[in-house]
Length: 141
Image (cartoon, rainbow, N blue to C red):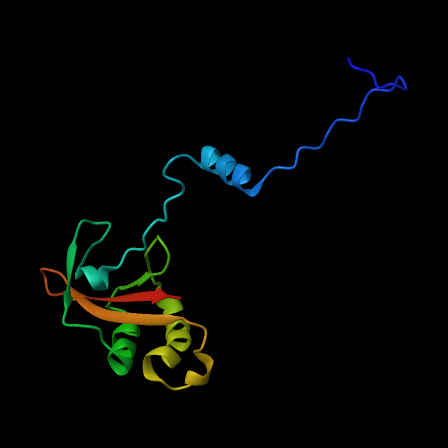
């Protein structure tokens, strides 16, 4: 232990890390590839979707709008797949009216004064080999 001239132990010098040292430290901690974003599933863009039962669904036509979305969404015989984030999910029958109320201003233009939050909805009808319909809704922001 080195003592100063007055017999005291010297105070430890604070090490001020430079920004580039900090960046290098973060790179070492994260690794060479860094954190990779997990892409959201986009069945409408891809034109098909395979459900949990292995059924392959194909997009029928292009993106649909207003009244057709509402008709399919509120039909209890039509499954509805909501794609938001990394885990698409089926929308339960009791949730469908609330989902329609939330997305209606974005897909019909009514109430558009509330749609300046960068949210958007795309919807398309999908069919399987048995000609059953499914509504796929992609929400993004």
